Length: 333
Image (cartoon, rainbow, N blue to C red; front, side, top):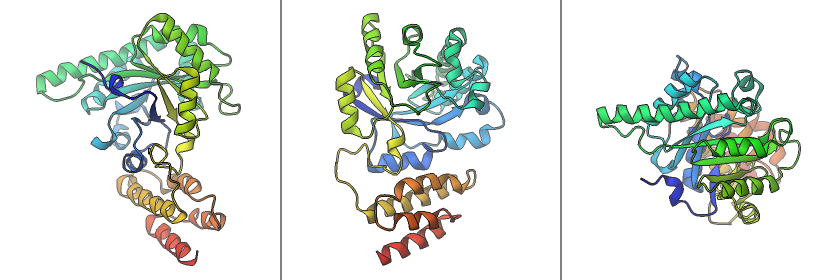
């Protein structure tokens, strides 16, 4: 049976997984205003999912049918916990599980996960196998209960070109030999963070390695993509199958839309209000309202009076306060 990857256009566009950004409310805004071809959740701790922490983390796993195909990104350095978490996620009906092997967050790396995986191929192999085993476990369980879980769930990895230096020639062939459906390559090393421009010539190298190996793993380029037109150019130059957009999605739920029309200030602010209201409804009981303020900064810029409006929005504590300030602004401008 074919997985969803084989049905995507080329190039296809993906919403990047970002902590405290691509939550349930954020993703629903994109599903409504400019749906990406593939949607990622924010990254989730596999260790947390198999502990009491699941009570909170389950909110990261709320999704709607409109978001499909939707992929959960997990991180862990414990194969047994990753297997259990993968089974749990597969049983929830997600289309794919992505393994984070590129996150530079120190707390994640201390656990031996994220970018730290690039230092330990044996551990990386064990983690990939654990996800495969978890998906297989879900299939067995679903056969017994006649549920959907585990059927045709894809496996992918998101990583970087290296840790302290370029490791493409040893790291990428290793990953591609693990029988994964897709590989997202962020065109910087872990050491570089986002301090230097992404070097897409390395994405082209990854594509060439894939082609020489004669396998069908989809290659997704990531790093400094400003919009879909830029993404198409980068795909043409490198030969990658798809593009993942991260920072450029802030304040732009329409970025994946096939319409090129730029929204008016009033339209942007009304979408921001809708986003805020949805965030409060879905996540207000488990997440701090301050998370929305990074979105306010993105929505409110590039127009007259934006700075003053942003300052006021930074002082808000709930949707009602935000709505009052925005209505007053629109009335006076």
